[in-house]
Amino acid sequence: MSTTTAAPPAEVKPKILEKPQKAPAVAQPSPNGESQTKGENAAPPPAPKLTGAELKAKAKAEKQARRAQVKAAKDATPGGAPAPASSAQSNHPTADSKGNKAKGKPDGAPSASSGATGRTAGSRGSVPTIPPKPESSIPECFSHLSMAKRLPITQADKDVHPAVLALGQHMATFAIDESITRLKATLLAFKKVIDSYTTPPGNTLARHLTPHVLNPQIEYLSACRPMCFSMGNAIRWLKLQVSKIDPDVPDAEAKKELCASIDAFIQERINFADVVITQKAADYIGEDDVVLVYGRNTLVEQVLLHAHRVAGKKFDVIVIDDPYERQGQVLAKALSAEGVEVSYSGDFGALRFHVQCADVILLGAEGMFSNGALYARCGTSDLAIAGKDFGKKVYALCETINITDRVSTDSLTYNEIDPERCSGSSFRLLYDTTPSHYLSTVVTEISSAQPTSVSYLLRKLEDSN
Image 1 (cartoon, rainbow, N blue to C red):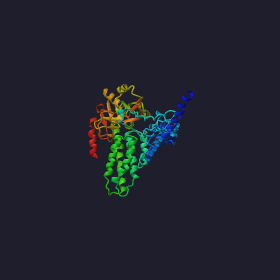
Image 2: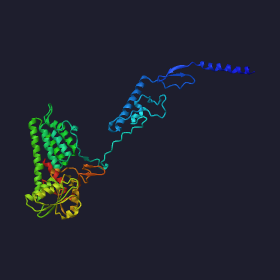
Image 3: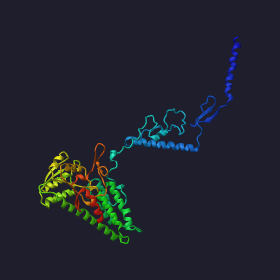
Image 4: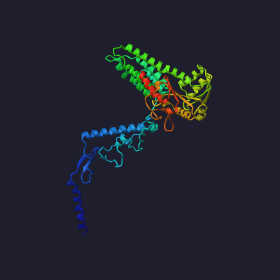
């Protein structure tokens, strides 16, 4: 019995072996070059074969990703050294742009496309992203104001004259600071530009000089430091003189005429104006008076020296200095050398006391608005307000070339930022605006008048031109 029962298992075995023969295996190459057997126990079918255009696009995308990754690694590594190699730079397969994953790669592995965002897929961790560019440190409420900056000469226009290049550097570093000094230096530099100018063939001096020669000089100077009111007035006058030149006049004669006009302008509107203002303002200083001044202004200094040397008056001077610039020390030393009694204060700590002791207050001007407001060094308004409170005479000295037809009632519409103190923690404006009712008299070369009569002086000046 035992032999008869053992036979059936032997007959079942061949049937099991014959079953796989019903479906012959078909070998098919895989994307990695390995053969796979198609059958019941075979792996799932691979992704459809890419066309030539798709392969080319894929290769291009991977190449761009590697380049972006290398660039990000260099920027993030100190000294510009490349970061350790990542999987995007190795020979390991990466996922394609359609989301198909390569064989043997885990689902959570990062793809090579992550290099485009500044991250790598290496086992050593990700490279930190490039830090964002820091925002400007200037407070937002002052962002509309300009600031002096020293531009590299290589950034200047090729048509900028060497004399103007040097002038722009001096202005940017405040080596030439006061408005009248800047105006005079600008006109002398423009004389050199005109003298070296040659009209191209087929053009006239009146039409070619301003747009192609003068404008590049003006743009460069404005980029180095914002123009003062006197420079703007003088430039408009110079352009008007150029436009009046007859096209039939030879270039040599036209240039000679322009240079002569500039010399006459400097002599009449700057040199002669300062002499007249000096004589008029010196008459307001009485014998044994105490004169209060702020910082150092060239015109104010000339008035004090004229009253002492020429008029022979004896008076004392109190110098309240700007605590940031300390230019009042230069004035105090110059007056002391001439024998004038000088009291010096380095800041505004005893302002009201000094104003009480003073008989006359002399203030220099960087500009004057048509509504009579004074545009001057930051701190001037404090002296004028204190002088008005104590009933003192406050005189503002200003050449008519510094008067503008603009109107201002505050110190934020027109001003300039101190480039040395331009952050939120240390911020300062270079100028302030003093309303007209804090001033007693404005002394100009035309006449001494009330501040509210400045607009009349401006119209009179325009009619004379």
